[in-house]
Image (cartoon, rainbow, N blue to C red; front, side, top):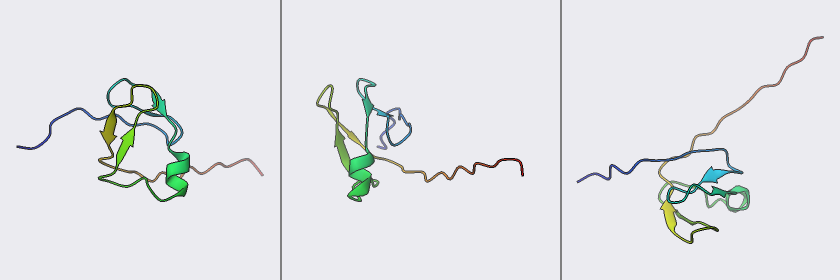
Length: 66
């Protein structure tokens, strides 16, 4: 039976915990190449583990008048 648990998402520096909603800063884990599907992440606030089920790369282009 597939897991139908709701998911949460946010920017790398403030991903909400799937259990308590506290923001998690995953920038250090990303530098160490540890942010990937299937890995667990332990919340600094509630000490429960959430599983990374997806990672989206987003590019933002900033422009100005010339």
